[in-house]
Length: 62
Image (cartoon, rainbow, N blue to C red):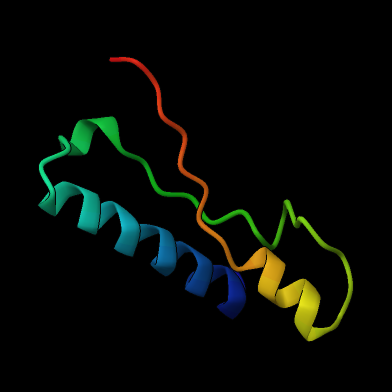
């Protein structure tokens, strides 16, 4: 995994940690960094980088 990929995963893990602290059971959460592999915006510029720095949260029924 690249350094960018590591940052993306660290960002996702930070969100999961926050959600656990708010009372969501850890077994209902998963963290993945996909911006490098599933970009919203292609290109080698700051606009593309900003759009791809994201966390996606999917809510499902238990």
